[in-house]
Amino acid sequence: MMCHSVEAARYLLTDPNKSRDSLKPVKVQATIASLKWSKEKYAKELAQRSPEIDYTKHPSEDYAHATITFKDEDNNTLIAELTTSWSFVGAGLRLNFETLGPEYSMKANTLNSGLDVFLSRRIQSNQGEDMVEKQNAEQGLMPVVPDEESAYGYTAENRYMLSIGICLHARNCL
Image 1 (cartoon, rainbow, N blue to C red):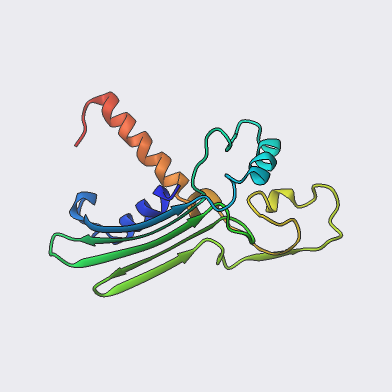
Image 2: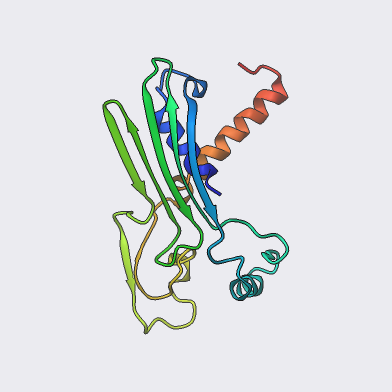
């Protein structure tokens, strides 16, 4: 579940002129848990909404937190702190990560998008459904994630996987 955030943080910590192998993880502290979706009540609710998903047979974590300490080629310490939760009760999918290096830091939270929308109780049927696809609420103040595919890293991830496939097919890998 957290693999996207780990790779985003690793990408941001890697010197742009060096390969991803230039960072070595030296310590990982992590916690995973199933806080919601493995509970019978919520598993049934999820199965009704998405019949192809059955958490009673295939449970998975819905919360993950990690602190990863890296060393770069100059022996500098770099740290990534990550939290991902599919069980977060609030407006939307929350991916939160922070990167710390010797002369920089960065923090990202997908719910701090800079664009919020408020949906009133008077919205009927599925009006506004396209704006709240990953929201846990159907009314109230909610963040809007512009260019969701890029914000969550799916575009770059797909581009990378495609480049690996082309590389293997052409047998001209670096």
